[in-house]
Length: 72
Image 1 (cartoon, rainbow, N blue to C red):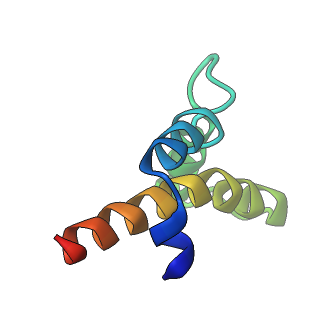
Image 2 (image 1 turned 180 degrees about the vertical axis):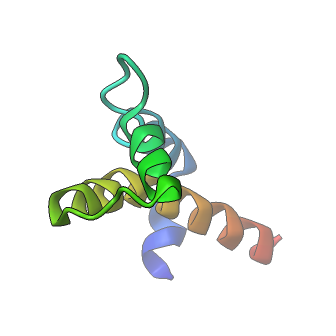
């Protein structure tokens, strides 16, 4: 929890918007992977790893926001 307390919210937002959404064209990569997951097409280990990689900044951001809400 100490990591989340020391991490500035701005950094978490920037990471989620850049790393979490890259590449942006033709659509954010995480959107493509989530569509594959919902359609049951997310089977290759590389695709699963890619989803986890692009979801990690979003997970950190959500954890940071939850931590801020609990502390408030």
